[in-house]
Length: 294
Ligand code: NAD
Image (cartoon, rainbow, N blue to C red; front, side, top):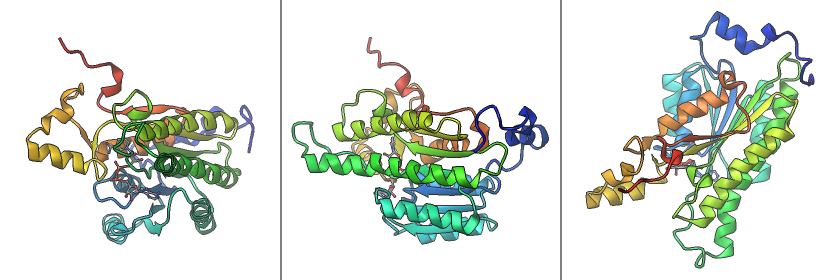
């Protein structure tokens, strides 16, 4: 990989050429993408797979340890975007061998890996810090944090090797953290700790990848209506208190998965070529201040 400063002329950078030539072209044209946590019909992973496919990806691996909907998602994506290869893969995102295997498979088949969206995650235990067991705490950390570490551990070297011949090596790892990883949260300790860990991984690894051209960023969603929050939304609807969910948010509402997926697309694409090591809040402004009660 060419060291920084030795990557050709400024105008050789592909993203600049693209912006100069065809700024309306597909945003991830020809890229090979892996998305974890893609089974849930309402989830951020599935919505992101659509964004990547719709925006020109060559191949999208839709991965989850639960495969109840993966084949349906594949059929839907194939119907909407017939040029995209869609590969459903069932595995636990915190299983090291499985993560390595899907990365190896993508590289072997396509000779490249461009984007790894490490999005799989679970909600924390509905217990106080005095009640939660160490086993439960570790399970949340393994699912939410170790999975992101493994994504970076295997995706980054693959991206470096497969982009080595380009003058401007690129590759993007995106991980889903949470606003709970940025600010104190009245909810579960294990979840907040795990999501702070995801932010920390993105910050730390961005420095460890210095000079490679590979980027890593975390997305920090606020309250999004997905499979994860469906029970909360259902309970609020049945009590007639749904409006309260958005009440403390500057935009006055929660969000849909697609609003997060569009940020995953941006961070995965070359359009965000100088965004690195960041925690991007996608929360309607929730984390920008604190509730003011007159
Ligand atoms: P979701 O429950 O709809 O989707 C999560 C998916 O991850 C599910 O399909 C689930 O099967 C999968 N998954 C869980 N553990 C896995 C594992 N070990 N291996 C492989 N797949 C696994 O929820 P979502 O809201 O779309 O969640 C996506 C990400 O967004 C999660 O990391 C979550 O913590 C994060 N997030 C969600 C919200 C929200 O309000 N929904 C807010 C902040 C962060």
